[in-house]
Length: 233
Image 1 (cartoon, rainbow, N blue to C red):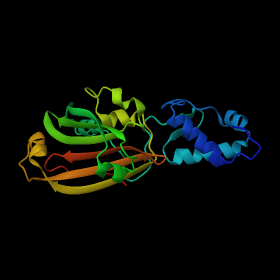
Image 2: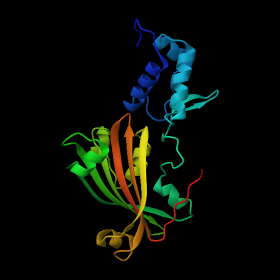
Image 3: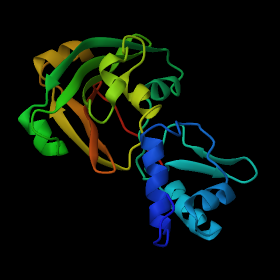
Image 4: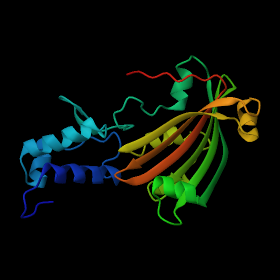
């Protein structure tokens, strides 16, 4: 990456991000040292330090003294409301977790999704519906769309045993997220899955994520009747 122009910390930051996104450095991988990177990029070690510090603040990499810098295993943008793994939510209540894939299909992104996420025309998405249980009682009904261009191997991934949320967090970094919380009346279909009466008020979370401006996934999560969200500040 050496050139006649001076290498800036933004150049280093963007190249490190490109390698992480392209899985040259997969999640959990140990990055070269600051000294090694400064030699490769032809810049001062302080320039590399600043680039890595910014990525660490965004949750993309994890820096630990003496043990080095690694790509975060499940990178999340630091925020007050972080993305949780449903299995962990259930197990933290000392309940037994169970997951079931309800349906799976590859479709052209519907117009509303393309407009909301900024997807190109005729983008292909993987559409999944799933159920999550706590002690065999309905816990969460998940409806998800994943941009195949952003996650090339998702079209062949097996979601029969592992939910898409957990699968994505273990493999795909993201830099931006948008979350909407609301209460909605249960439709007949969703009510049947969650063991509720049609029209029952349910807690709904809608979440969109992007990586460097590229849409990754949009999900709707309907929770069981009486669900209460807890978070820490």
